[in-house]
Image (cartoon, rainbow, N blue to C red):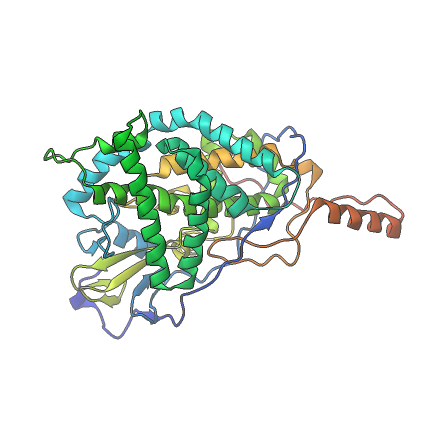
Length: 441
């Protein structure tokens, strides 16, 4: 960043007329078939999602500064003294705090996501994922709603110690929240937020009356460094941050991942054989190129300049993770799948002091759900069909709608055999290149 006095106020900042968009729900069919032995090497560098606009800095129609340049996004995210995270009129613990208050909140809350906590939860996550995938059977399913959202709700409930009876209420809330967010209507989003807060308060009242040994009860026992317990508003904010955001995020990530698995069947066997860290790296890379975490906001606390764009104190700054993760200045080929080469610059979980505290849990949840899907998916040698030609993509989520089903595929196959007089075969697409250096699942 340069000092404001060094900046030409008429240069360096473009304008964005419309930053909105709508997403289609992903509906894909993942057939169940016995697994096949995997190869010892990754077999190529695949093209990823449709290219997004190159990273740059613009002002949208509301006057917000939208930062899509990778280096500028990192600089802003790592400079909390110039760019505050206190952007909401609502209390947000810990993500809306700055400085010492944020650091204290993270010291209190981060232990809930440590390795021991995640490892202890993993068997429950694996059981939940296996049950949901088995229940999907051999029918087409919506990877966001039928798989992602349901897994997210059950996984979060298992972690927090919430009763299974809450599942349908929480699933309904996830869908209503997604609909309200897309509408852009502040009254609808506020009403949905109030509903979730009411759910949280009801759970907290029940835990106080009947404590048990779970994360929610332990959260009730936390105290700030001055000895004061967390107030109800702070507890509600923490649980809202942990659950409301995570439920939608895990659902959307699942949609992106299942889409990629369906579009890249020849890599399934290699992913099945990958160890945990290698699979995590692959998942992070898939999400980098088709990032469901679109943006976060900051507010400038003083006049400054972001890569030549003047920013006044009080201006809202939007960090566009999606564009930053596809910035060609950092990722020479943003569509190339390179888990090792792109790992250091991957911003899926953010960067700086506000990097996602729940990353260890989210990473494990996504690893588990991908393994469950792969256990029921055909191997690369059986070459399951990819999404149909009418699949519509939206770069912000990578979700699509496809009407493929096994029954229709069988009818097509029989027609082709009758027409050609020979047995139809699925054809594996040609390899584009060798494996990225250092990648060995």
